[in-house]
Amino acid sequence: MGPGESELWWVAALPKRHPARLETLPGAVGSVEAVVYGPDWRGGAPVVIALHGGPDRHWTLGYDALFQLFADAGLAVIAPNQRGSTGYGREHADAIRGAWGGPDLADIRALRAYVDGTRGPGVPRPAVYGTGYGAFLAVLATAADPEGWSACVAVAPFSSVPALYADGCPSTRRLIDRLAGHGDMDDALGPRDLLRLAPRVRTRMLLLHGRLDETVPVSHTRALAHQLIDAGHGHVTYREPADRGHTASGALASAPQAREITDFLARPDTARPVPNSPVRQGRRAPIP
Image 1 (tube, rainbow, N blue to C red):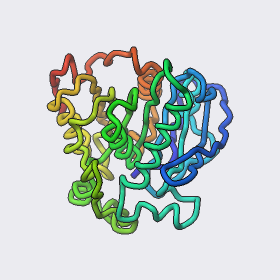
Image 2: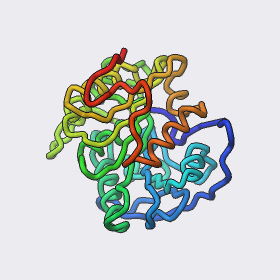
Image 3: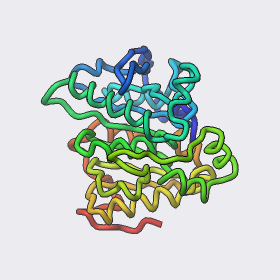
Image 4: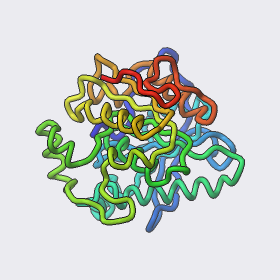
């Protein structure tokens, strides 16, 4: 769901160009190629692991304006093409058929552990960012490793594949059928349902979803925000742009939204919820 790359076509002030580079990093059962921006992630800079949508997409070395903003703010960006990504052969892409949130989540967890271990103590834990399917995967990652992440930004996540199949548009249902998204995981984490897993999440969350989204109904993110708050999560910020759909919210084609996300990720341990956040000391404020 959503493009494989952020498509922030304009910003108030274009950032300077930060060259992208490729690195090969360990996944759960083999290596994973990642596009990397900004300062060396092995140092003390804040790190964000960025997850693409689709899931049949992949990150490339092409210009990505949102990642340029991240790098301009001092963030080290690691954008992996974990199992399920296209561009690496049929076996790599088909690894998640019938197992969405399985092998791909395992790769992200392994990558997070490797990055955290390589950086050592005394530096911020990685943050995670994703749109569409990548947002679903990002929230799953925070539930799987509740203490492993410093922050999470999820743009237009769906709550579960069955729920998305039930109320998604025909093209979304066709995508789920084509990519064999049906099926459940029989492991310690259990069914990949974000509402069920919400009580496990401890990470600071920024949730965004365009109200006009016809690919993933906005009700999915509204329900997730409510579930997190009801579970006692005290650091949830919810944004619902009234004039945007799935692509617009995933693309973040607005300087204020992009700057809010960048600030949220760049200062994950110190930034406070922004004004009008739906959470104040664990209380629920109005969410549509």
